[in-house]
Length: 203
Image (cartoon, rainbow, N blue to C red; front, side, top):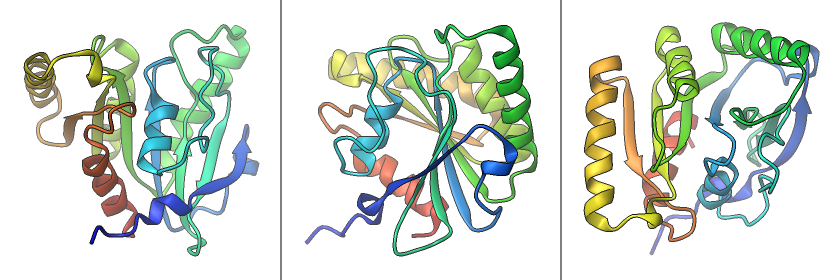
């Protein structure tokens, strides 16, 4: 009998544009980051066994705030959807605001227990991916890379890509960043990712 998935209870709580809008800094949070169109929303939905928890947008870069989902019945467990990056056409002053907001969030948020970085298996480890991983490693937080859209590759190609990325991550960050193949479409790797996130949240 499979274990129930506590993350399936996740629901939208709030969107934060400023520090004042963040929930109290206690408990446990896991943040999700990814370039626009890397499949971050689809990954969140698959891990939480919901079809529309995170909005899957046809317009890259739509997420323009920190979106918090809480996990009933707890009151201090959150999933945090970080702004999509890469293609977002936003003014320079807004980019500066987000950079400062994210810098502060990663450097001071005590509740943050881990970071999931979502990257398209066909285009992994772009500059922004490395920047987000760097945030986690600098802070001493564990990070987990999801190589999404793995269903676009055959099994051999998936394995080859995984090995290449694993070696590069190990060279850059030691053993602080783990990596796996993932597909929200075929559900490849969903259980593995769920266990990582659930472990960080202690649920």
